Image (cartoon, rainbow, N blue to C red; front, side, top):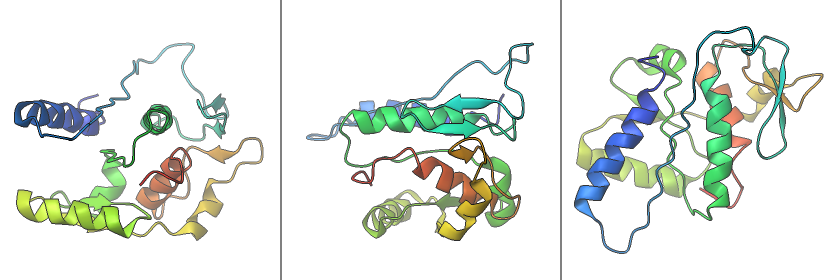
Length: 175
């Protein structure tokens, strides 16, 4: 899994850089949702129901979208630490590359303030970002008849449905 771990690798790189800078008066938590992903007889199968750490149930309809299941618990954990903001570096690789190409990262947030902070920093760093909508009507494709949600939605708008999925695991008070 050399590509699916891109977000986690970026978090580790950011942790090293921020540790070297040692910003005064700033508390930063780095959470990497790492787990084994080997095929076995006990691996996830389509139709399995998993329960996230916040109690929400998820019907697995795509075993290739397994990273967001561990990321969901990482987001719940981060919220439980009493954070004000979360910057989640998830790859959503295929869907974002199809939408924006290989050089522009997507930004998903319901918070205009947080989006503006990200864009301000991106201008300084030279990184390219584009804010995509969190279109709530797309949530319809995430509904399950046997769980609170599916782990993937319709193919169209895949990065948006992935962001809507992750939103289910972030406290409303946290940006």
